[in-house]
Image (cartoon, rainbow, N blue to C red; front, side, top):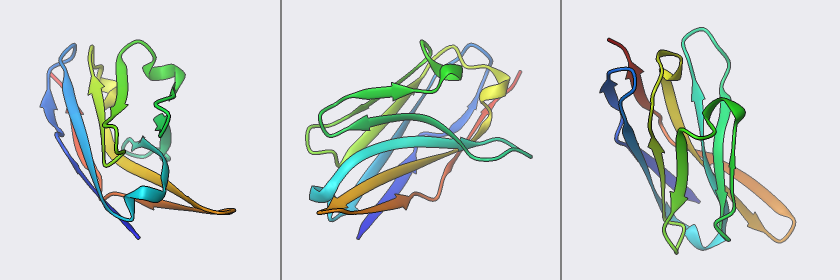
Length: 119
């Protein structure tokens, strides 16, 4: 069992920055991957970025060059540094984690944190 708690959301001007954090607790030793999804008003949830335990990073095309995902060595905390934010980045951002126990893969979600980019 893994619990995820996001923080760091808020209101910023276009072009501004936010740094999101996600703290994992519970059976964090089995976490193989952590990442971020987002859901804008009226839209489906979409993938933003992921980072593996080996620190391999992947990004959605819409955020490449502007957002950076990272984690600590123990994979108990994942971050999303968000720069050059655009109004279309406005969404609820959800932290996610994937655990692997043998061949069994399970996903977990945080409660989400609201990011609003507006002038």
